[in-house]
Length: 115
Length: 110
Figure: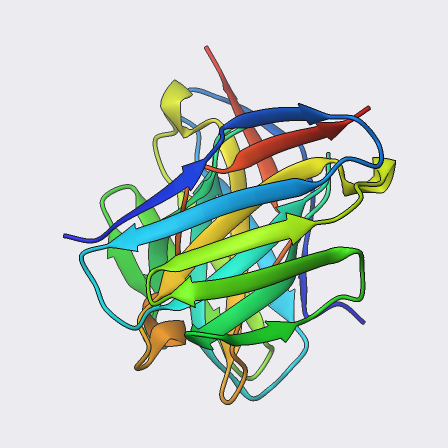
C-alpha cells in the first residue's frame, strides 16, 4: 500500500531563517506531488505541484520554492522566512493517470510558526 | 469568484440528528467531486467521492447536481466522532490540481 511521510511535524523558526520541509511517498512510482498551505482559519492554497522529477509548477508567487530531486521526494524550501509564511503545510500525492479522479492523499502536515 | 464555495458554519447539532452540507462550484467543466474530512490540526482525509447518480456510504450520502453545479453531503444519526470540518473538493479536466472549499465546521453535541 502507498504511504506518504512528511516531516517535521512542528517547526518554530525566526524571521529571515531558511526552511526545508521534506515529503516522501512509498509504494508507488511516478506520483503527482503537491504542496499546499493552510493558514489559520483559511482554506487550502496550492503552492506547487510536480508531475515528474525536476518538473515543478508554481501556483502562487512567493518566497518559497520546491524541488523534486527523486521520483518520490518533494522538498519545500525558503531562503528567508517571512511572518506571513506561518501556516500548516501539507504534502499530497495522487496517481499520475486520472489522479484527479481518485483524489489526493495528504501527509500529516508540518505546522510552521515564524516568530 | 471562488472555484468552490461552502457555508462555513458552524453547524452545532445534537447526537442522532441529521445534518446536510451544501457546496457550489463555478466551473461547469468540473469532472470529479469529493468530500474530505479534516479534524482539528490534522490533515484532510478523503471521506467519499461523489458520483453523478449519488452514492451512499453507511450514514453518509453524497449528491451531485450538475445542472445547478451543486454538491451535498448528508449525515444521518450524527455521532460525536463526526465532529470535524468537511471540505468540498472539485477537479476539472486538464487541471493538475483539486480545488478545495474552505470547509464547513460540524460539532455534534452530546
